[in-house]
Length: 400
Image 1 (spheres, rainbow, N blue to C red):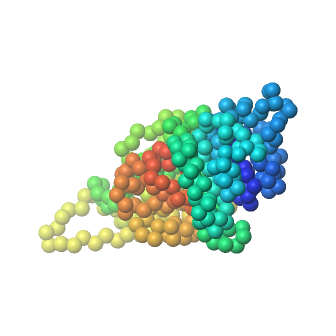
Image 2 (image 1 turned 60 degrees about the vertical axis):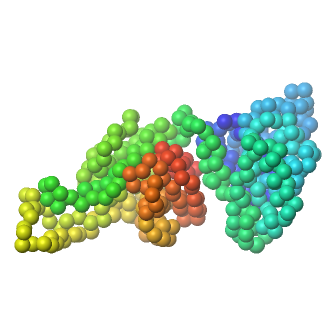
Image 3 (image 1 turned 120 degrees about the vertical axis):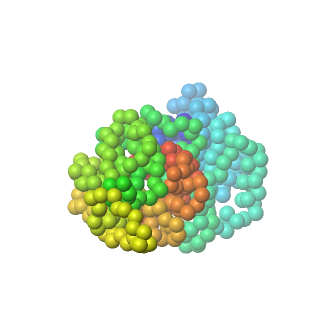
């Protein structure tokens, strides 16, 4: 997608550098326009280095064809993404003025206009600002979309709604607008990604076992997405009824101990480890050699269970561990439990989801998760597991 990233003069402009990098990593052709005030907060040279393209700051460009650079940019763009969009920017857009290059480009363009507001909470609540936004939504109709703002602590010290959405959230919105993921964007080229998937089965006897409801769909979607993004993929899978993606190495296991052994056999060759499997927490202390027979005089059968090894925590303790992503399937206090696991297992990101909700999680084609790192939280909307797989991997790419 051809995207103009427009940066206006707010303190949140520093986030635009991260956003530019994420958009480029997604495979978009990104060009940057900065207002004069934006240049006071972040250097155009920084954005030029991140995008590999000249940064545009001047309305009357002597180097442009016929001296009309704003017309060239306006015709080139498919999307104009303003991040941050200050109160002044929103007012100028509503007034139809063109005091700088950005506004002239917008007036001359038919591109989609996506805006990430950023301002003090009281400014955001001001009726004038809300009126301007309301008018812009009407004027631009289907071409207009507002991303955020988020609530939280602001540069001025106030707390409330008005913070620019995080770059990862904005980049995810852009990605969600694509009908198909850019299969030729090889974000993971030269990387070795090891993924665990599906449930484990812990034997009671030769015909019975302890397991869970995991279908393996999420892990297999991750394996397919990672392969399409250029990675060498090793998928270590418990028992599932899914055909393995092409161009990956599939290792089949049954129990948690077998899965751990296969992980440890290859972990030193791994760049990114994604523990998506629903590994059974416990196994039988003794497995019967023969099928256990029902005893009419024994209404209760007692099984002694022992704790299984924690695969993700084992990898997290390695002195030279790979980048680690875990999953937390919970039914209550989802984020709290996920954050505890993130710290205890010494991993980089954790994907938390509420498996008590219908239509997402186990055995479903869709999921709704929260991505959590030690300093970021990204709440994602409900989407297919295939789409979510790309989102998770692109988040990983942004920090690798």
